[in-house]
Length: 554
Image 1 (cartoon, rainbow, N blue to C red):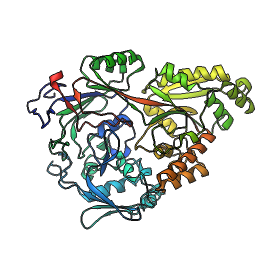
Image 2: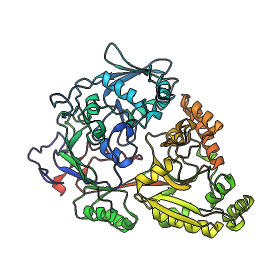
Image 3: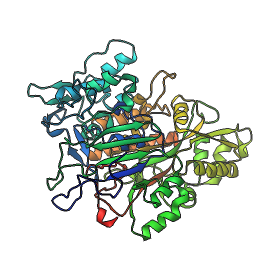
Image 4: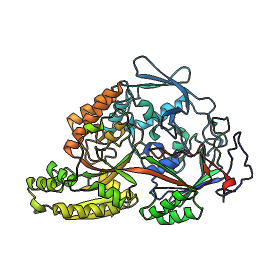
């Protein structure tokens, strides 16, 4: 049991310098599957929203504009070549108290902890699926990754060092405009080695970090409670100790309708991803006292093609399918305007200097779609085998969108499409093992850069062994021109030149029609009237470190 509930005064509640109130419990429901909370295998947004309250890295994203802010590092220096970064660690930061430590008391974070975590990141396996973050970026990372993949003893990562002054030094293979953003990624969060050795296979559900909240109890699939980290190092801009909340309580009700009901009754403090059947309620919230937040999402939803399977080996068929889908109708009628049509490829709008207009748009053109299908040998769909469209059942309108696409393909092309709806874990397992023919996929930015979206199609991010699951590049796209543009962009410091290179890569991607970009979701969040200082951003990162509950309004 918790000592207080949402909006109720706790026994130790107090008021900060500017009237911000301490205490209270923030209640959240996460309807998506939660596979675990270990940083270096964390790939699902729901898990990120929880784990980001527990773990921290050298730097973090600002909760409003996503700029880079210091976290475990107080500052950093870059040498004149732009390849050597030296990070000065914050003194006195302690890991959460936890039984993994000999005396149960969290110890101070050291530079060795950072290097150990980053080395583990470069050791692909059950505890690291995000090694691509440092591959080709940090000196020696690729050598270690390749050795592990080949079953050889992995060498140390030469570009990761602890200095004589106890700082962290990282050497890059070339200058990188996005390196600090990469360091804010969850794969670069810092944890104690004692956590891994103590909990072993159960490390996913026994998180130990330095963040504003620490684990109190976890019942996977049922409930999860985080409590205030009393020794947290940070303060707000007025010098008040963070965090303000006593605890954060998560439930895992999969029925979004029941989640909405819980919010309307005041049992849930915040909802995101309002269900389609709740759009009328959303309109009521906007008229009432509830706080409705929106942001242009740094995300994309698309359908992928298995290019090694009939009929999608022919680019004309892929292009015909793309031109047969009326994406504006999907956004306006199915999603009720809670998204934007993906007009120019997979990169969402909002990145300055990115030449969106140079990316050819995909138009809804039934006549041209039928012509292309006929050229490919399937006039009016004759001879075209049944197509199986696979979607997961836990997202915003995924099944309804698939139903409309099914109708469009039959009406425009004469295609018989069968929809397969799977739980998220089964869906992604089939996709990553190249066992799906035509499937839904989406991406929410790990860091705010076009590069983060185009990395989904970089050849180096697909294993050469086709029996190995391909998490990042699930389409297993390999194109010499795309890879050359993308690779050169990674080592180009000039922003405008870098953006031009990335756009050339995306043009190649769209020429090959590897995927059909559908839409970019709008981030929508509804808060109870008594919630304060919880900003929204395009990556849907939730930073509860500064949030507080104004019980005077409850």
